[in-house]
Length: 123
Image (cartoon, rainbow, N blue to C red):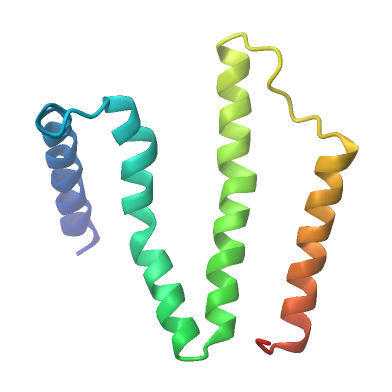
């Protein structure tokens, strides 16, 4: 079953890649914009829709899991990937060094998540 779904996803991905050229020509849009902005937004629609639906049904734990999971995904994978790509492209200004303001923002974000998770209620 897993092999069948993997093959199906592979076919869908190939179809998506093949149709990007036609899409960009038809609506006169840059390929870079479609690849870096439009496709990731469309890719996250089901996740955000399920979070909104869970919030409507007052399932706050699921909403927090989706939000925190997305944040951790960005923090651990995307940031590291972009910095590594910057190093590979010899862009020296891209580092993993964060100044005091950026660390304060992360600290406040972590405190906000902790306060939200502790009481388990949505206000």
